[in-house]
Amino acid sequence: MGSYSRIIAVAMISAFACGCGGQNAADSSGSLESKEGQIAFTRATSVDGQDIESDIYVTNVDGSSERRLTDTPGFDGMPAWSPDGKRIAFASDRDGNWEIYVVNAEGSEPTRLTNTPRDEGVPAFSPGGDRIAYVVDSLTNPTIYVMDADGTDQRQLIEGNWPSWSPDGERISYTSYTRGEVIWVTNADGTGLRRLTEGGEDSEGAWSPDGEKIAFASGRDEDEEIYVMNADGTEQKRLTDIPGPDHWPPTWSPDNTRIAFTSDGTQDNSEIYVMNADGSGLTKLTDDPAYDTFPAWRP
View 1 (cartoon, rainbow, N blue to C red):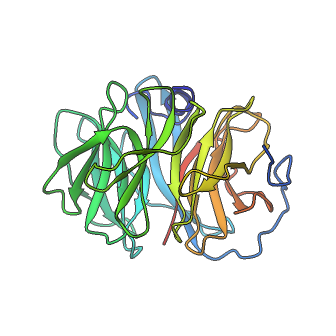
View 2: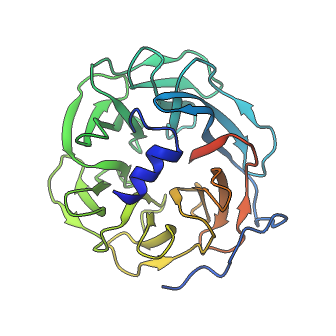
View 3: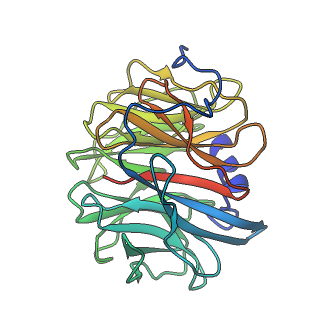
């Protein structure tokens, strides 16, 4: 599991867890056509084996007004916005093992939604905001579950990782590890499985808000890069060509025009980048000695 193993090593989850778009490196002064919006992300200040210190931050898309949202010992990360932008689901080990929590957008009223001896992470709100998909036992046997947004009615859906809802809430794309890393799509009830990629090095699919595209990370080339394809798996196209081993996982702006993602770059220090949806206008959003990962664009 190339990219997922890299995420575990670099993005603090050791306890859990083609044509390009016309650029060769990040433009340090490059400006995007629009800078509206906010992005939540994970910042890890200490990674020592299974001892991880990280919290969730929020920043404007132009890099201004960065603020810390959580402040507890241990790991808080993998943020996912609710469709109305009022809440953030995330994974935390603050109570001993990885569980799913939800917090108000300003950081108040954290509430634990899961409470099991297993590890849960990678939450994703449904478009209606009434359900959350998440992953159980990501290292040993990653399995996607779905629960109501208040934590009730937890039920197993399918083996896999990195769930992403279609905008109509009827389908979920996910990564399967049964034959390499491959992106599949399933109906929201676990039926109607369909394979979208064939390369064996594809992961972390993210559905565009208009439902027409899925962005994903792929290691099919020498380095892992960000790709995009039609929602039916056709017309797969590479968007990035950045030095360094890993670029993951993508997240779309609400207007479908931009994509944010994590890149390790050449310094082995993860930062958040933003680019236009065609791969142009690449801009480095964060610049911190800590590891900045798992961006999530506010709806």
